[in-house]
Image (tube, rainbow, N blue to C red):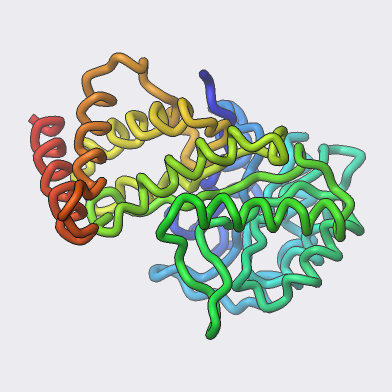
Length: 304
């Protein structure tokens, strides 16, 4: 199965995007857009925000969007994915976006922790957009909490789908569910397995038929040796695609696609993740450390 790619390079985590921002270089941004389209991206993520290597004033970033978005749409009709936690960023982006050039964009994202959730939903309805739902966190008594069970992720996904269909008047096909993806080298809570199991629950739920599943791939191999990262990512995508994943937010230049199901790297990653499932009498913490050790051994083997 070939996954659809949301290209993530217009993001100041990448040096080319930082340079484009620092110089307000529209040609640089356009080059990032066309390169990602040439590498198969079907959406382009647009996040103009601070990173550890680049501090950006939020209002300055928002003010730049009416210049940036038409520049991007002048070189490609591939739809955009607006990525920010601030609702005003999305409102400004949507007002600048020309629907006569490109299909409906994606709002990335809504979550139970969003302070302006009702405003996000109003924007989704007003502009008839697609939307990414963060289903890896749930409402707690004193704020949001991470979901540690696949059933919780499934429940959050269902709650959001019902809410978006009734309040934003959109269809399942406009909803992209993100079940969460933890760094594999530090996943002592078994969250990767939670996400994979949640994908299966969501895919098998008739009420969620038509919804898409998406993950942000760059989180997965963070902290692992550089020479093995893309191998691990592709092995993970094989497991996720088997459970219903159909979109990936990632770097299209690295070819983020699944490996053949019978590839040894897929089998070994699956075996390592299985170590993270606690058997009777074993705590999740202990199983998580067993999984981490198995991942470290796999990294050493792949790096040889």
